[in-house]
Image (cartoon, rainbow, N blue to C red):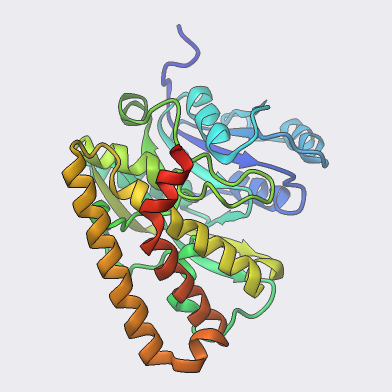
Amino acid sequence: MDPKTPTVDLTVAIRAYNSAPCLPEILRRLRLQQDTELLSWEVVIVDNNSTDDTPVIVGKFQKTWLETVPLRYCTEKKQGAVFARLRAVQEAQGVLIAFLDDDNLPGDRWVAAAFEFGQAYPQAGAYGSRIIGKFETAPPPGFERIQSFLAIKERGSQPNQYRPEVLSLPAGAGLVVRKQVWLDNVPKVQWLQGPINQSLSAKGEDFEALMHIAQAGWEIWYSPTMLIEHWIPGWRLERQYLIELIRHTGLNVYYLRTINVVGGWKKSAIALKLFLGSLRRIVIHLLSYRLAAFTDTVAICELNFFWSTLVSPFHLLKQKL
C-alpha cells in the first residue's frame, strides 16, 4: 500500500519551529485526549529547521507514547510556514488533517470533536476551531477588535459558516481539512509562504489555501466544540509587532481577493472597490478616534490595516515586477 494513502481517520499535524517551550504541554494534552477509543488517529510533527531541543523532546515522548496512536517525526528543510504545512499534508495518513501550531494547546476533546464535526458536516471541505487567548501579559485595551489577527477565533456556541468572499475565514491554527480536498484544490506552490523566521511579509498563506478550497465549491465552517488555547507571549502584544503583523496582512488582501479571478476588468473592479472602501474606513476611523488614532495601540493597528489594504493592489504589482 502507498504509505501516503489515507489509512486512518484523522492526522494531527504539528508545525514545529524551535518548539521546546510549548511542545511538551501540547503532546501531554494530546496523550490525554478523551473519547478517542473508537477513533483511528495519529500525530505527525513537522520540524521546520529547529535549532533547539525539539527533536530531543519528540524522541522522549515517543518512548512513552500511546501504543495505538503513532507519533511520527519528520523534517522540512525548506524554511517557511507554507512548506511545513505542505509537508504535513504529504506525510498525513488520515482522511482528515487537523493542524496545530506549536503554540496551540488543544482542549481535552479536541481530537474527538474534530472527527465528529467532519462526520456531521460532509459539505465542509475545511473547518476551524474555537480559539481563545492564553496571554503571558495583559493585552492592550480594545484588543478584541484586532484579536483575529492573532488567530483568536470566538464565533459563538453554535456552528456557523465562514464567508470566503469577504475573507472571513478560520485561522490555520486549529484548522481541519479533508486531505483529498486539499490535494485536489490547493496548488503545490503558493504565492504566500507564511512567516519565515521573524519575517511577516508573506502572511496569509492559510487564507490562500482556504480560498482555493472555497472556490472549488466546498464550504468552510466554524466548530465551537473544537476548543484550543493559543499561547501568546508578551512580545507578540508589543505595539510594533502588532503593527507589522496587521500591516503585512493588509498588504496581501488584494491578492487573496483576486485568487482565480479571470479578466483584467474584474480585477480592476476589485482594486477600485478596495481602494474606495478602505479610504472610507480611514476617514471614519480618523473622525471617530481623532488623536487616539495615532496614540492608542489598537486604533493605530486598525488604521495601518485600512491603509495597507488600500495600497494592496499596488503592493502586488510591485511584487510581481
